[in-house]
Amino acid sequence: MWIDAICINQPSDVERNHQVALMGKIYSSVAIVLIWLGPERDFSSMVLDIIDTGRLEICNIQSFLVALEHLLRRDWFRRAWVAQELALASREPLIICGASYLGWSRFSAAVRLVRARILNEPHTLENEGETYLKELDNDNIFKRAIQSVQVKASSYYDEDVPQSVASKALRVSNLAEIRAAGRQAKFSEQLQRTLYMQATDARDRVFALVGLSTFTKQAIVADYTKDKERVAAEITALLIQDDLVGYMKTRLWEYKRYGSGFAKDYHRFAGIPEPK
Image (cartoon, rainbow, N blue to C red):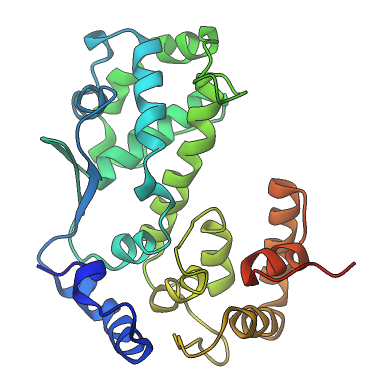
């Protein structure tokens, strides 16, 4: 068993540099990747059971969406390093929540379907393995029910439940794209898919993508002896030189999503004051 938080001596930059370089080999050679979401709470087992069977009659649609919103709010879906766990796993990763478990592809396919129905977007089942979802989406009952639910997610959220689910489901959709791409996606594309992710060390938002990205010219090397400002400056230069179009797409996506450009995000990433 290998757990990064335990198996890597976190205070040692030398140890972290060495182990991060090996993580791609570790994840691609393990027997199975287990995704631990945490203990059972907020009816998480009900959500996984409905996704596993495709049977919504287990509960009403409002209860399902509220429980799904709570599940997608869990920390795992925002951790930068989970992208590498998914992308490099040679076998199907297994989601575990309390005593319930479910294969990643089954879970992500269902969540993407829910998001498409909430936003009234076209969505086709991609392969025979997703045929069980036809029952979940049968006769547009699910679609009509979602559109009728207007309960608030909680007193802390302005969005109603369906919109909150759709927003958080985008994380799952992006992770599914990362797994499908494996090691074949450009760094700028992976960065765009993971801009919402978080890490205790801001540099890990970059280093977590090194083992699952392609580079036209010089590849990034995880080096924890470099401070945040230097890493931020180096990835900006690399994006401009290596993939200018991808860099501009990332800036545009950031502006549309957060109302700010890369310059503002650079200062937020590096933890330094913005220029006046």
